[in-house]
Amino acid sequence: MWKIFSQYWKILIFEGVKNTIYLSLIALFFGTIIGAFLAFGRMSKFKPLSWAVGAVVEVVRGTPMLLQLYIGVFGIPMVVPKEVRPDFLNDYFVMVAIVLVINSAAYVSEIIRSGIQAVDKGQTEAARSLGLSGFTTMTQIVLPQAVKNILPALGNEFITVIKETSLASTFAVGELMTKYDEIKSVNYNAFPAYIVIGIIYFVLTYSLSKIMAFVERKMKHD
Amino acid sequence: MIEIKNIFKNFGKLKVLSGVSTEIKKGEVVAIIGASGSGKSTLLRCMNLLEAPTFGEVWMEGRLLTPVDPYLHEEVIEASNTYKKLIGEGLERDAAIAKIREEDLLNEKFSIAEGKEYKGKIKKIYKENSIDINLARRKMGMVFQQFNLFNNMTVKDNITLAPIKTGMYKGMGKEARAAAEAKAMELLERIGLADKADVYPSTLSGGQKQRIAIVRALAMNPDVILFDEPTSALDPEMIGEVLDLMKQLAGEGMTMVIVTHEMGFAREVADRVLFVDEGIIAEEGAPAEVFGNPKHPRLKEFLSKVL
Ligand SMILES: Nc1ncnc2c1ncn2[C@@H]1O[C@H](COP(=O)(O)OP(=O)(O)O)[C@@H](O)[C@H]1O
Ligand SMILES: [Mg+2]
Image (spheres, rainbow over the protein chains, first blue to last red):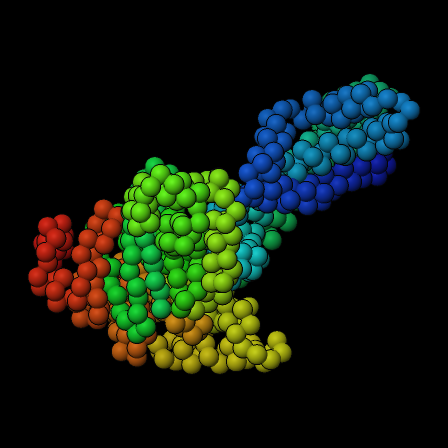
């Protein structure tokens, strides 16, 4: 096992981990931003918007990630004629990243929405009864309290995304799991490589959960 | 001060209020009593539009808070096609208006069916009288059963947030903040909780929370304060301190509307008592009348249970 690691550490650490983290960060960063918009869209009083966003979110959450990746990487480019197809549609890495973003946006939007809705309605009523606007109420009262509900769940979503990037190896986009295939193909000995890859995923997710726990503890103090 | 005209409130199929009208005068203390679930909170919350009435209008200091209710304005009814049709059929003016009101004949869903003149009249009344609800609420404090202090803020920030954010104090950011904080400290001194200015609400007792919620409302210099069962969530030993503060306010001439189960307090402090039952004000009058000589059978029954 150590042999595997010492032999291939460059591939594993530099490329595999880098690409895995890269994909995860893209998915989480844009997923969180888009997810926030989706959350407010779904809570909108304008019914058609809230209905449309709800439909998209539920479909994304209700279908397997691997299927979404196939649709993104193979399906969508197929239906766009070659002459008008922009380059990025052919780029597996970009398409995988886009699917990951959409997928995590759907989950994050539900995390944000339930975090906001878990804040006691009385808080909003008290603020509005003082003549504060809906916007001030949201930014000064509701969101600061919702963050305490949202952060832990968001941390879990981060960990899920890191693990789900492994599905992207199906398209050989160069993250950790793809590197496993590469190592196996020259080494023929799969088992130690499994374990090394497993340890690397674990180190990534475990340190992340420790960081989240630390942030949560900090927030509790104020 | 506050005038509510023929308020109806439905939650889906559930009819909670079915035609409530009353006027709260300046300096008046009005107690609202009635069985649990009879619609007392809903009535109070319609006054500052935390609940939007299904029909009817709410006015504050001559300004309209709700949309225009066409049935409340004869000149609007007279402008409607329905009215014109009834007149064409030979009805007298008063009879036509009465018929329209009784049978809900105006087409409110598709108001265009009532003609341009009708829509124009409604628009004109709204334009001339309506006021932004946020502006109105600044002059209408509210105190809740569950206190609802902002959990993410210190006591002082709870009190200063609205005065600062609504631009109540003139001057640059810092000056306004200083003025708001001075006022907050003065109010906290008054209730003997100045030492709690920098703590978070979770460290306070229920009685302390509710007194702070009251001064948070006072910090906006409201013209009227609405109380929704302010002592119902308190341990018995803390009820007194909250009622004492409310008595002080009443003594200083504050206009107050109080939903309460504290009959002794209502009897002592209120100028007028409203008994709400089955969605209407079933009986109202001076406390001596309502408590001493109740007429409505439901009020008699209610009082025999709670006294
Ligand atoms: N937001 C709401 N949605 C549906 N029903 C409600 C709502 N608020 C109150 N109700 C119902 O309206 C009735 C009157 O409630 P409420 O005004 O709170 O009564 P009270 O304050 O006299 O106890 C109750 O049956 C209650 O369940
Ligand atoms: Mg109530």
